Length: 218
Image (cartoon, rainbow, N blue to C red; front, side, top):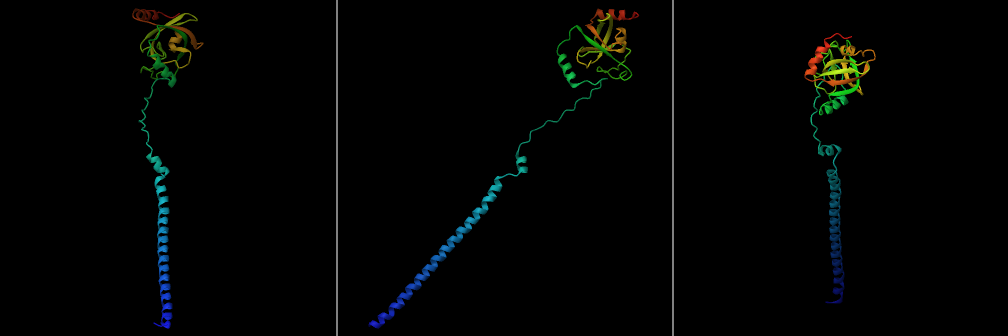
């Protein structure tokens, strides 16, 4: 080969190297761009999935309220309607229930009042019978219905035997409510309230008291 042919081949080899290097660089740039594009897509999917996961973990107020167990409330029992002649306070009814557990004393002493008049006459008592202000009856907190008691007005020593057919009195500090007729027998209608002694009668005492009360009152 001569010198002229060798000089002519050198530029051709250099141009082929340059073309190969440019192709390699283009391929490398393409690969890098593809990788960066895929990473960008993966990051976008990851950011989009995070809010959905947080929303799934966070419960709305309605769902939180629905998930809480609701306590079981038993149905309310209707209270039986009372049909006595006078309204009884709830606290007094509880006091009577406690007093019924113990037997009352045979002799009591305290204040007594009387009740009657057109507004109460003929109304149902706690025992179920009609109130008659002209009969010798009384209202006591605990004594059984039908019990006969002797009531003595301590200011004038007048006595009367009455039958318990109602509950009362409903005023603190009083132990007995008597009918108008019984109050007249003890001469206490003027002051309305009197200091009395209450004695429970039994057996022969009841029979003797009925005989004594048939006598006219002086």
